[in-house]
Amino acid sequence: MYEDKTLVCKDCGKEFVFTAGEQEFYAEKGFENEPQRCKECRAARKQGARGERQMYTASCAACGGEAVVPFKPREDRPVYCSECFAKMKEAE
Image (cartoon, rainbow, N blue to C red; front, top):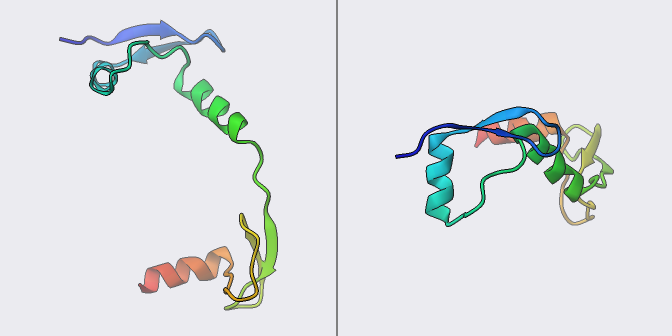
């Protein structure tokens, strides 16, 4: 029923394929318009709308090293660096 379509991105002008599977998904969700941007431009636009994330620095509760996190650390909750957090996830 659906066939792949080649569309042109309205931002960068590059051609991209609107696959039959994507068309079926759009139809299931009730979307009436075809995508106007390629995957890369959609991702860039989404990231731009979100803006830069504020990062906070804290001391890792496990190793004492520097931990950079996207939330404001609180005194009553431990904060872990990326390495210690990954080790804890593996241990679960």
